[in-house]
Image 1 (cartoon, rainbow, N blue to C red):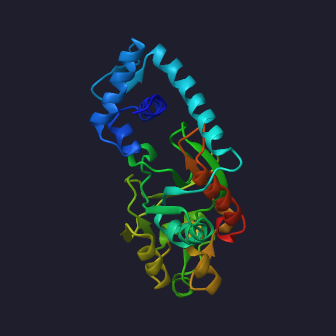
Image 2 (image 1 turned 30 degrees about the vertical axis):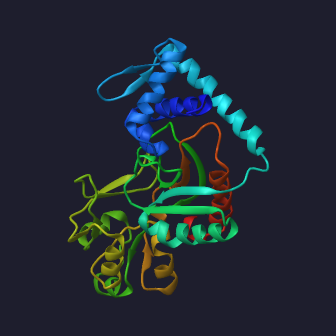
Length: 297
């Protein structure tokens, strides 16, 4: 292992917070990563990380070295490739919510592969917010506020929670005029992690909360929408999930004046320093593509 690669391994350890996570991120074995850290500490003659049973924390010397190492790696990459002429190639690993991924990310990935023949893409569709470092991912599409402030985000649009029902259901049960009217209607809920059965309306700080007793709970968005279209009840998906249904009239948008604040659609990466050309190119393509999609407004 050359000295620059040794520094790259060290930076990955600091950013990942554990030897196992760094090994997964680098696609190397944990023993190889451990040997690299031990060799670096032996060469410098300083302890660079404090080891605990759950996580590694850099020492003062380790933090200083990591900062200098990041700058050195960036300089090396830019010198080797040329910041403006770096080739777009390699494996790009992306994750996105299932429905958004199917409808919008997958077509973008296909166009991206056509434009950059030296790139391979691994696209993982998952409604769970997976850890980018733990899973070795380059980029994620996230909807809503970010829980992890260490991530680097780029907003590309927004979506709304919309209340919808079929024309047949509304003809049979009537059209709710205010959120409180929903208490007398059949509702369809997703199986969220929280047991609360409620919908929030209006601005985040001044909105109303309506507690409901759903007659149907489903853990899949497509099934929820199918049930709503068949007249089973009132559902509350994200706006991009029902664009076609609203346009065709199989679902009707309700209580529009009471909708809560929009949720941001963000592209998320972990690196605050050097951004690989493949990631930078995909970010640029996504911003241009999503900007013109009505469903995320």
